[in-house]
Length: 270
Image 1 (tube, rainbow, N blue to C red):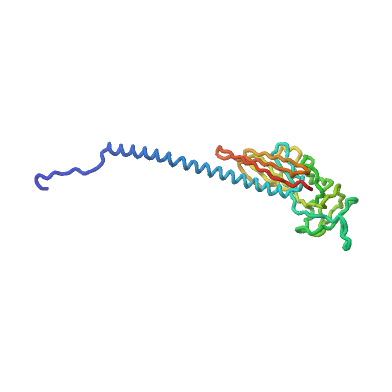
Image 2 (cartoon, rainbow, N blue to C red):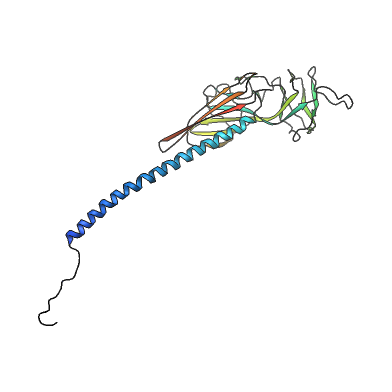
């Protein structure tokens, strides 16, 4: 070191400067967090609402599909509005009521017990033995309808040996009423939608009781979770207008609830 040369101190931060910087950085971080938290929270809320709406719409669309395939005038709803039942139609056509002038044909008689008849045209496929054949179902959606186990006066059991062009019945059956348009429907089983225990279930082969006080028994398919409320109603309509089913579903998650209302027009002309 040369004589007279001064030693310069090393540059650095003082403790006060470091504390000031830390305070400023903390304030900026807190302000920045406020701007970030709000959009993230909004995105999470929007995603949850979208998920709930999609789940409700999928459930309602599935119910609508079954309702559109229901036997006319077979829709029933219990006293609580939590259970919706219908008879599922798998096929349908027109029966021969009068013989062909040249070829003849097997007609469906309404004067005596009949065990077979020819189909005008053809069914989509041969009906399955054990399915039900229904002619002119004019009963409303009252609690006495849909007697699937005890055969009512408009429903017969399809026998083996039936084809797309001819239907066999076992035992032979005498239908109470003929159809003005010679229509008949093939149904396989009742279908029931039940809101129970916070879920929506679909039961196949279950017949709704007059007063649904306990959950149905048997196997079921889960349609939706998170059901906080549901309400079903049915206006059977009249000869001048179709029936109308109203479906209301409420789904809840993380303290938020969405409610969707869906209305389905149904054919009530037997």
